[in-house]
Length: 197
Image (cartoon, rainbow, N blue to C red; front, side, top):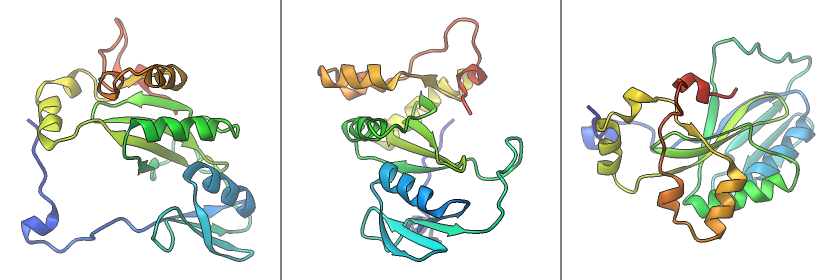
């Protein structure tokens, strides 16, 4: 059974009021500045030869890039953070961003309707993964109903989708609710068959 999580402040707790930024160790600073500038529409708030702080909103920085010598790429089977997620207001914004980013030659490696979210995953030049996503439900009750309906018992991963096909249907007037409704697993497939890394 799903539980509606109360914000910490409503539980009488002191907790962060927002997530501040993500800091990345990078091999090629200029390449990463260009990539995050393209994908997130971020601009430099401060940079020198070794660091860059970038933001896409009124925060002083959301992405910190630090160039360090002789970095090695992490092993695929190592523990650590899998990805960082950035939310858009609605499907129109997500798909417009997808088309803009694709026009620069950058494409997602995994597009999936998890259920609560519709997500596109990208890899930066160092292989760090970021998720561009929207929330599919407008209320907490819709989310609770989704979980209580057994959808995650059957499939905790989601259903992959073709972003070009979704964008075409959206532009043709198909409602976002219809496009982001998660289907069922194809016959003979498991949730792990929906994973791309």
